[in-house]
Length: 186
Image (cartoon, rainbow, N blue to C red; front, side, top):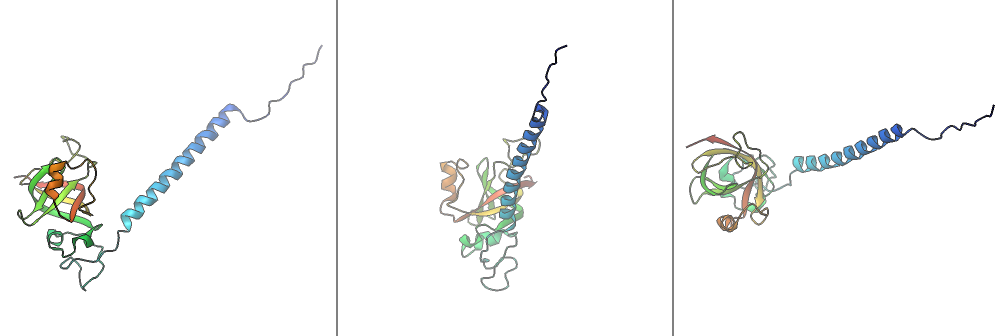
């Protein structure tokens, strides 16, 4: 009888290569997401140091650094140097909506002369029934707003039309709202 020489295949089976590839992809995905989370966490936990406006909550000495959230609308309206508030967190409760400028932008405050401009982040989820992916805010309502102070010249593209930009006018700051909830309806 003839002898057939059988050679053993060298290397790993195909399924081992598939598992190795999946593990490599998972590690790359994990590393990328960990880097993104670290950057977001750094931004969220280390707001820029800014001087407190006179009358701000926690202002005990002139020029004190205050990182506490702004909870009083008067701090935004009466700031002697509004630019110093840029980057500060805002948590307003029960503020009156004076005028709607668009689906995602409106004025809050006491009257036409004492008010602050608010722009809703387009990514705010809407509670049912959904309203164009945003919170349904109307004139005369009171709202709770959480966000941050931004410079008036730092407007996001596509959020405001010409009417909205004109409404903001020469205001040096506005509130970029990442969360909003209607507190009362008229």
